[in-house]
Length: 339
Image 1 (cartoon, rainbow, N blue to C red):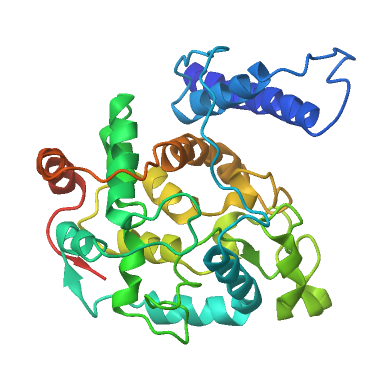
Image 2: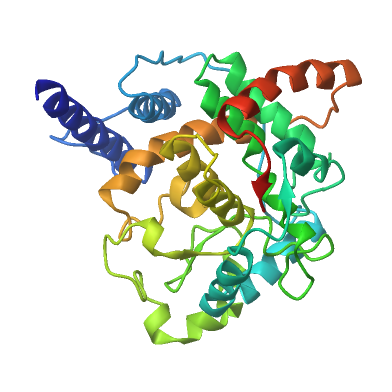
């Protein structure tokens, strides 16, 4: 149909434009037909607007050249807290192909516990993400902040709910153990930026100096750009460092009463894969489906990051928000779920 051809053409043209801007970002002086582009922050807004437009099906999104500067977040250098550096060093060393396969088999077998979403959320009231350099509040506050940011922009209610439950997989600590890195004391298989195992660890990953400690990198078959994967195989056919993303994805995928769209499950599964959706790595592994869905992840990421505040909500605020999100939970995630 015309509509299908138009949609296909729109996505192809938008992806082409975004790639041209990205190539300019990476240092090329000329972009397409020798047209020079001025190095201004406005280009960053254009790219972000394009990717949000793709995610929302072609909706117009205003590009604001006077957008306020974003707060400085995700700073990973010599000034980063030692607890954060230690977390990433351990994660980089121990997240191997063997470990990910073990965790997927062990924690992907659900049913050992049944909880409603609210019961699961209560288990995060005291959970503090040791990998987060920006916020020291219990994770539950971050979920409210993310969801409320999405809600304030009038985005779809299912995306608001994704904001509210995207880190809920951290309740894996209820089933976890220190040996697997899935406990409150050892969180290296729960939190932190993820990466694809079974292929080369990218230099654009945070703390790249820890990459050499991963034993898989000593295996020639696992240390090339595509490693043990076929080019273009798609992220769903790779193994990503195990964490709360994968666990929550399985909870959503396996429970038959979940009514969220496929875009929601994709965001949950890959929102911590920063080397991919933020740094542009793993292009050789991407499928057309990944390239199409990336816009949703990048749209969501703006709220995951830039709504963070080290200010707790009042009891009155929490009560009001609970009423609203109870309606979304009843609509998309009703009843008790297998965990």
